[in-house]
Amino acid sequence: MRAIEKTIIIIIYVVVLGIAAYFILASLFPEKLPFSTNTYTIKASDSKIFDKLSSFYIEDNSVLGDKITINDKIVRPITSAKKFNIVFLPKVNIKENTNATIELNLIFGEGKYSDIYLNNELIFPNLDNYELIKENDFDYIYVKKDILPYIVKDILIDSTNTEEFIYKNFPSTSVWSTRKLNPINIVVDDYVKKDTLIDGTFRDNLKLAVYASGDLSISFTKQDLNSYIGQDEYTIRISDVNDNVIYEGLLEDDGIKAKRNLGREQYFKINKDSLDAGVYYISFIKDNYNDASDSTVKNIKINSNNVLIIGTFLPWDKFEFYTKFKFPNKIGFYYWWSGKDQIIDVSGSQKLKINLNEEWRDKRYDVNLTNGDFYFKTVKGYLWIYNDFSSIKKENWFEIPFSQQDNFDFSDVIIISKEIYNKEANEFNFNKDLISNLKTTKVNLRVLETNVVYFNYIKFKIYSI
Image (cartoon, rainbow, N blue to C red; front, side, top):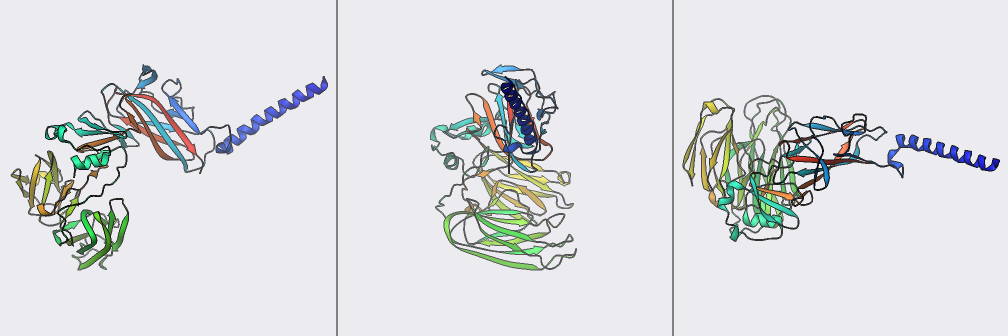
């Protein structure tokens, strides 16, 4: 009998000591324990999702409504458009800068959408102004409703590949996607290896797209403004459609780092041989040494007849350019320097006079245009031009596959990956890698339309590094 009692006492001691040791190890090395979990979950069905004594909670209890059931799931409507924090406050020791992932599961109301932001980054757009035009095994493809009258659905060129479908039907268009789109290399039938001169002076960043085969030759002049104290440099980078950098070089300062007059002209020439036929991107990247860009590039000459200016650019002198819209679009202008008010002449499919008078100084001027060909003539520089694609002349234009935008505004085509969105179930499931700090990690969420999106759950998982 005494032996049995001793055995029971020993077992009790071992169990108690084991539990104590487990909790001590859990506080010091939580990731090492076989029975520990590094996943924390907030569910709409939980009663303590706002409990600040928990390790994982929602900071603001005014953003969610009462529990309801949708598709046999208990959810809560997001009732506020304000930003709110989801807080991970570990009760155990976690290494600083630990890898983590966050998983967010939301349900949309029937036929309703909203912009959703995670850490101020758009992760799902409001699709109210878009229509589903194509679905394949991997994606939903939406187009802006404004351009539907210009699309003949019966003659759309079909493809099971999303990127090919966009290029065949909507080339040279702006695209926003929930995933990184794969590049498409193309063949341009009218390519000729002859020099194109971009007759203009540009300040700040400048990005060009060029179709080349065999070799690529670029020459240009750099000239420092010397308006600010500090070295004035440009980085020039040439990359292919897969973002492989095939050349990168530094265009150094002219030797004058103080505030002085316009610097001397510096001539540069770059040659790259043995290039496969395809699209290449040439980026002039300004330095970060000055309060504003303090250098210019001009007289850019490229040995290809197919050259585009990609995105926003800043001519420093008068400039003429061409653009082409398959669908109605807008182009923007902005000047800030007194005395640079001007009238911009527009010809082609529409004839306009854009009057950038003094009232428009320090304000962006947007003009809506129909589909078609347009020629612009500016008479003064110091003018930001906001456009997706531009060329020097019509004969330099070529249909680039598409431009994936970080900014959702004005995108003609929207790609929603089926990995994150189930249209039949109206369910959005999003994962993002994070770095978890030693003490507290906060993730902010914002849904712009109220009572349209329903909160189901959010998970936070940490990984040892």
